[in-house]
Length: 424
Image 1: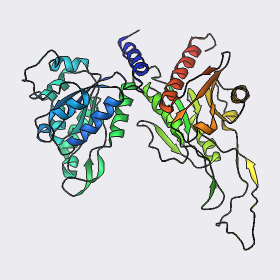
Image 2 (image 1 turned 90 degrees about the vertical axis):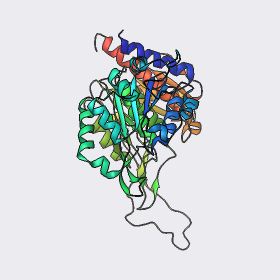
Image 3 (image 1 turned 90 degrees about the horizontal axis):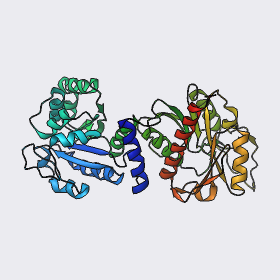
Image 4 (image 1 turned 60 degrees about the vertical axis):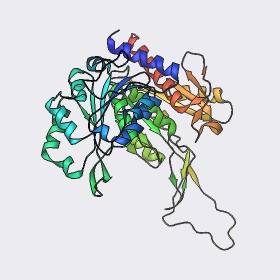
């Protein structure tokens, strides 16, 4: 086992011990905060990282100290906040070399034009620059500045230099800026920055080099131009699975039905509306993939002939008859050599028996069975995992993030056994 495997195992143990979900559990992050009006958003970012189980050491530039007091980050992290290479270090606040060497990622947010230039040029006359030079951890930057500063050739050159060295640049976004102008330069949303960090930390995970297709959400089968047949699926389960796979290093293609959720950072996304569109997109996406996880709630039937105009009620009309036809069973029809298939079964009765029948009928390696009435649209799930040649594994009630973590670990084990088997 190499050092990266040790780090991955440590994170998984931290996930189990703290209840935190994903690759950030137990991760050691250095958060560099530069001086700009967006510095106040770094407090929200820091809080999100801590809630996800990360250990965060904050390094503030002199400019950042003009906007925020170190006590803000000290209260959030319950750790010393570092502001100067010349401060009186204590055993609890080790020097820049220790901070740099322990870091698993260096995240600079906000990254001002000045800080970006200094990092690109390798200047080490403040603490953040010194830590950046001393660290071999991946560097992530979330730029925040005025529109013209963002698009100045010097800034773009410095960003390209940092990208060429492996840095990941998140954003910036477009919107209202501190000057009152509208343009590029807003700090990326906290969720996007956290997602990028999760993707970077997951690169050395057990699914590195693995391609997985995940389907999520409902399908909408049109009745007419304004109405459809659908279900209450939020897509939360499939999106959580996609995120936890990225945490473990997988390349994920997410095929999503109509949902209000934001796809995890780093996913390739195909948006669909109907079951037929999902079948077409999934069939194309699985070419060359290692696994398919079908978490979408696909309609079993669709209107045979959707109306081209809005259906109107007529005087005296008491009923409306609809003729429905079957939609394709996507999991059953996809049969690529070497593709490992995992399905879901949302049932209202005979949970294990119905799920086991689907497991064998559709050629699945594993199926996740749960009670449809308590799962669809909920943030939690009580599931049973069934596989071939194994006893059903009943899981306790848990969040969908926690269930997604279990599913991701099951996929790791299934792929590992396949590689180790003589036929694999």
